[in-house]
Image (cartoon, rainbow, N blue to C red; front, top):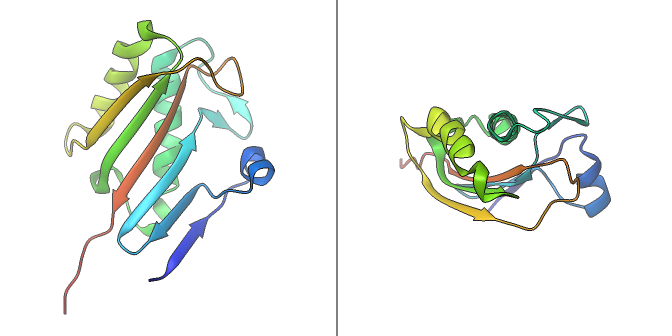
Length: 131
């Protein structure tokens, strides 16, 4: 099995020693992704905007593999506040309603950046081709 890795310029990837996304066979895993663009938090204080930005970053990690939202089979949404469930769910529905994945939503005590309200993970599947 071939394993492919995609790295970005994320400070966290370098500090931790991880990749943004890893493909192993037909499975593509996208690491926990925050709503940061060029190191700048998007949507500070707004869980909907943070969810959109975090999912946008995670979906961008699928592009090198030729995949988009329709290939996503599982999402995980981590929130710091129960009150933000509806906002994050609205963002999720807008992106994935046409091809709904299995999804988990968890409320956590916090993230490495206390301004972050939402972090997401994705799992996607490449099309299986037979010859």
